[in-house]
Picture (tube, rainbow, N blue to C red):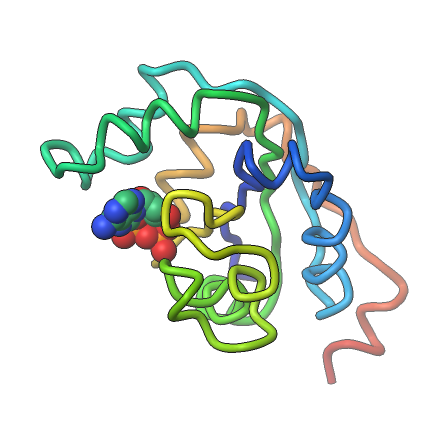
Amino acid sequence: MERTYLMVKPDGVQRGLVGQIISRFEQRGYKIVGLKMMQISREVAEKHYGEHAGKPFFQGLVDFITSGPVVAMVVEGKDVVATTREMMGATNPLKAAPGTIRATFGVDVGRNVIHGSDSLESARREIALFFRPEELVDYGRAIDAWIYE
Ligand code: DAT
Ligand code: MG
């Protein structure tokens, strides 16, 4: 089954939105297989956001993502990469569709409360960057038969 990397950013943690954000993925039927709070080092932040190195917002982005604890998770389920991106909404919360996480909780692009992998390849890279293999748990849920036909 597909896996993705999701992370409540420092603004989401400070604002007490961790539970509500995680709940959305649980309610959708997705399974959390890895979960932890951590503070990201600049080195890891620069790796994670490597595709944006050199852009005008890069330093601010690294400053922000390292400014406080984040809650990192690996979530598993059918088409989870694309579906969680949809659930997050557009990068700029003002452009995000109503009801999405970013539209519900944010207004500024630099305070958009959540990160999610944008492709299967990014997901694999980001999961490996933030989680050791033994931190991911393989388990079944009785409820899966009521989520998947
Ligand atoms: P996403 O987080 O939707 O994958 P992205 O990968 O293009 O978006 O950018 C990563 C983060 O960088 C984004 O969540 C917020 C910040 N960011 C992106 N574009 C920005 C901009 N034009 N100004 C300020 N911050 C920006
Ligand atoms: Mg991105």
